[in-house]
Image (cartoon, rainbow, N blue to C red; front, side):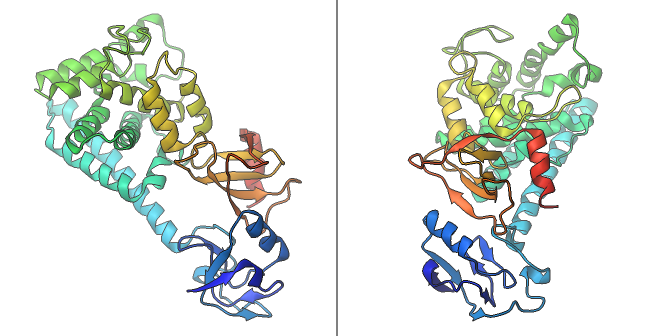
Length: 389
């Protein structure tokens, strides 16, 4: 494709082929006009070039939107992105079906084969390496299966994905990643030995019921130990509710005695639980989930593992709706490993609340005058989405 400087984009004209911001993001489809506003914003946010095989024309071509569907604005999903997203979420759903079937087989026949779990963990590691951003957006993704009958399976796969991403970030060797992944996949296994009405309850639990819930790490530990699983795995499942300050359960041990896998699963599981909808409470957004965990830094959760989580997901995870200090509203589309507080944003409205025609993107920087002020609440998000329906 040809490289075109921003200053040479022809104002008031159309380009007869798609214009790309880079190899992934479409800036303009042929029926979207090049405007002064667009050029100003691209220059302001330090883009110097765009790419296209097209030539300027005076009027938009007929039926030449992206994929023949009409106009497509900046950062609307391309066909390639849609296909990648479908592939990732199909993989997630198949993984949920896999572990749900595994759990049912355990309940019916007491079978706990380790080989299929190891194979599934290897698949998840491959998916993380190939589709990291999409896969890590799953814990906060809307539209996932919220059926309470499969909650444990959904939670187990979410926790496994996030645990393995943390493990990769801290550079665990392959054999330890597999142990960590199996531990995460089975960390709630003991719940299956409890009455379903307790862990699927929509009411506040009684003290007796809470005590029963607190036995599940021990049940899982005893089950995996009896099945002759490796000791790092059954130790990890025993410790995923232990806290750094010694106030966790079941043994009340402190951070010096909690295994690394236990510390990782504690953080991953807590984040995935906080950002999941349950019968008795709404889900939190990714930013609120991160903030909740950070309040437990040095008390509940290991600081090194929390730091890894923040670098992986950002303080503002993908999909978080935010308001900037100048009143502009947008959504996080990509995290920045170098500066977790400064993700890449797709801007949706200007400072007056008017929707952007081109939804420009912004790579924020720590030194910028304009920063993220806060996340949007549910009503604000609902109103924002209504502008684009």
